[in-house]
Amino acid sequence: DAGVIQSPRHEVTEMGQEVTLRCKPISGHDYLFWYRQTMMRGLELLIYFNNNVPIDDSGMPEDRFSAKMPNASFSTLKIQPSEPRDSAVYFCASSLERNTEAFFGQGTRLTVV
Amino acid sequence: GIQVEQSPPDLILQEGANSTLRCNFSDSVNNLQWFHQNPWGQLINLFYIPSGTKQNGRLSATTVATERYSLLYISSSQTTDSGVYFCAVAVGSNYQLIWGAGTKLIIKP
Image: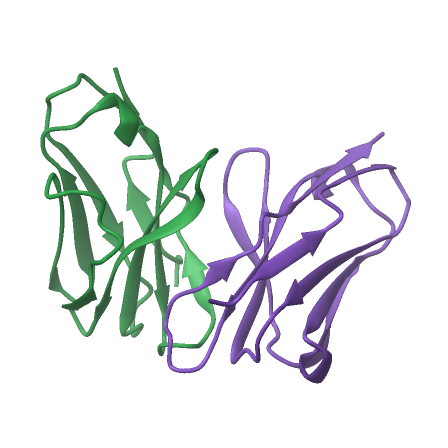
């Protein structure tokens, strides 16, 4: 397996624009996680899915953020409208079961100007 | 909630040196992972080690769950070992990984 695949690797957008980040988890993994990493706050869990169903989105900072998982091999994280304070590295991770080893994608570095 | 403390916060070594990184946690855990975040930002899995000892090449890790700590050993350091090493744990039925602040390692040639 190629591991967790995220796209794009880098995204630069203007304030107010919609941004969509994409993730393909490892095949067969039932859990998918979206994290955000900033210098100030470190790694924060935004939302996680189990079998394509969102289980806990309490980490999503605002209504501007939304995430979907239409099938077992694809998830999106959308920010609309984007703001400069959303600039961060966004990671997607997947695991076979809830408390088993989590594997991370290469991340998407988002810059909102 | 559980506290995860890593030490030292920073470590500068010459190539070839050995190092020990420590992760202390304040509660029993059922998941503990060590990651290396390289200078390009990638998070690389090193060990999944809620208890016991594992080795992978020049790296090894030991978790003593009863005493609530884990150690990561790096032997014969190389410049490519530079980066930040994170310890992350989960407790009970909680799915969420709780992260330490990391140890920033710089290996000088």
